[in-house]
Image (cartoon, rainbow, N blue to C red):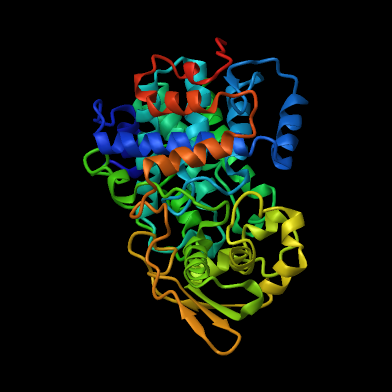
Length: 455
């Protein structure tokens, strides 16, 4: 009987979709566009500067891929480490599969794609291979990784990105299987580190480890052939309650594309996605009823149990902590009537009006589950109590704006991209957007980078 690790490796070597469905291409291109936007927006964040200094201190002298679309280059794995960290640094990157697929897959594929001189079509296919492998592993686990403490972006993303990079390298099934097994021992990421610089490093390490696993496999490093399904292997070790399906092969991979069902949800706010429905609700009420923050006596926000567990910072004092605070999300929407990059700063978070508004937020939980996004409640809800006793109610909020089931319009995605890159004076944002939007036509992904690097 073919085991899981072997069936995944066969899919990586021959996924069976030489011609990609038009809708899959659209979704994957959206992931590339949004991820490059958030990467550039985050490239000067403190965590990125630290990682860049760490890489520079190695003095490897290897120049294979560009760093955050600038003139500097580094070894492919180091570029992926920096770029994925930058893409996740603002928590503004897309969401699916209980994590952030593009923030791992795009940096890994682009970095190694530059090294290999891969075409744009090759990059799209590699991303899709990685996404489908990630989705297959997630589908086998009935319980929420977040509640156990695992961050899927780090633990599942490492395997997904390894699948993508192995496909780019056109590895054989045996070599792909070995790379997956090696990557399984590299995968990690803990929810306890949400709201710190370490969280974006989860994405950075996942992208870098994917490249390292493939390169080390090529060098002859061996790993167990059944590491994913073994009783002491990857899935068993991660499983919150031991109910994961380790038994069967991935028999539908490549025939039923999960990306067509799950898609990608694009963030409208640089906050943990668990806050987005609530932010939408507060902004809708504030706009419709011209609510002033000082007139609010209490806000009740009802979210799912797992959502609440991720939003651990109830009285944040920094912009980084505020990204994982439902209280701040509500306060920013009340005080500023927006929740954007300019609000996610230490100065704004510590303003007296913001802190007073945070103190008026009450959170409750609802133990229901969305069949599409199981770590979320089926719906969220917000009520606002005003002075004089008036009560405003959003009703049940099913999807956040930008969700795969309520997608942004093309012009909204473009506007987000241009806003994210507006501070990068060395880049032609419009030109880069157009190249990304036609990535399938590029002979080489190196042509995406303004300072065209040839290794």
